[in-house]
Image (tube, rainbow, N blue to C red; front, side, top):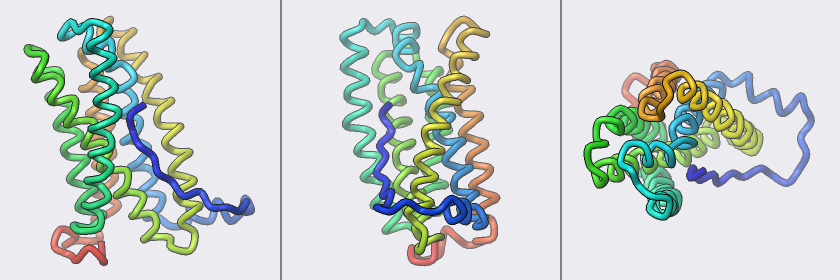
Length: 218
């Protein structure tokens, strides 16, 4: 899986009560829900990306392996880097919202660009990069919202990521079994990620002018 996770999990074992205490913070819960929908949608499409490329643009096994290596290496790392820079310079909220919007758009466009190999690969690269932009921005957001228990919030996000990948893989499998093809998986995934965008909007709605706030206040 190409999503890059860089989590600080702490070096101490926290009591169970303390671990659940972060769920009292609505902004943390909102962030975790955003992450769940994001990773679920991502996993639903990415798990079946290899057969998608084989079915739609008829790439052979070696070409698919090379594409997956480039996607998982270069573009995932680029996205992570951009996400970290964006969180620092533009603020976490603006970076999260913008990256999820690009994530949804790329997923919607992916089946529409299967007429050419290069078009498909470019859109897929944008999609994977956009997905990885969100992750460091969300991690920074968790640290900002719970500075005294950031290790707990980041640990929770790691668990959410594993849950989301599992649900996404299952959802993708159901889609493939129902339709008999992988071509529509990105559209199903876009719906799930769009739900994450809705949660993000509700979570951040009280920050009415978040786009114009300074990074320190976002």
